[in-house]
Length: 398
Image (cartoon, rainbow, N blue to C red; front, side, top):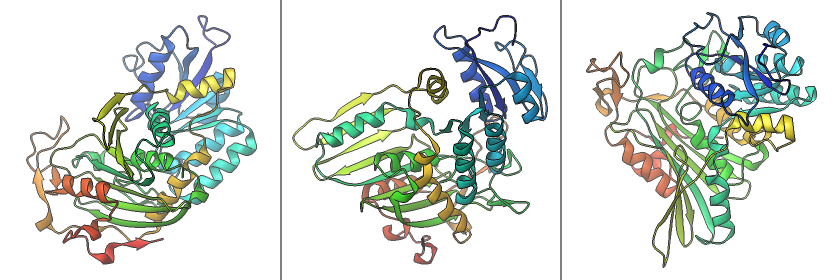
């Protein structure tokens, strides 16, 4: 413990501090400067040590590429795992074996078997595990649930989600596993539904009160890609829940004009739209003017620390992501995504600083924004919307 550490501090080791890990690094920095938070960065596990500039505001945490040794030497209470997807289970079990609690970045595992191995091992070790679906910490979710309980939109009929983002070639080459379904014989299952827009899937299932694995009856997938990748970049899924409620998610990384992803909660007398990255809720119902409210959000690392220090309930324990992992499994075991023919897409300039001057850095599917919106509005799959390239044969019922 450093000389300025408080005995009640919650020491954290961050495994994977570059890429998306930079967000966690900044979040720890923010929390360490909060007088009401006792979280501090005790160690960083990276193949290449972070520079002093990258660690500004963190003091001098210990650095090592030996995760187990770092957990022991730092006395860590929490390990944040922001490493490649196919490493999640083994690293989580290493942390659990050392009695260290876990914040595990989404998606939690590349297959349902690996998810089960992780969840069982963590439970047997008696440590807490929080899955990093930040949207499930949004105060918008209980607000929407209360509106449903109050009958604001009548009987719940289904939930549809739409995500229209843009990613260029650099996104699919940012790491060895990017854009792959497998790598070196190991499952990776990178793809629009399972990684960048995974929050749309998990949040939809949570609002449908169908977050556990046993809440899923059947899953239909339609997987496509315009980019020259192995995984999907334009896809949809429909989950039939145990209650009979349909949940659909349509997602693309090939939008000409990207926008904030959203969920539509359909009722017999109205609808609720939730922009889950913005914690924004719009209520539209018969006989009333539209009502829009912005909500706050509970940080998942703060919640995990509060769980350890004062017994606060965990917001996203593994069992609350079981249904999402059923979707990951359906994508993993589905037929390979169908490549879209060149006539369906066009090229466009990149969106990252290093690729904006390249006029053909990304592939755009014209009209795909409208397509994913129609899916959310009608709870339909692409093939059911008369989309010429979405042949019925692409549907893979599970």
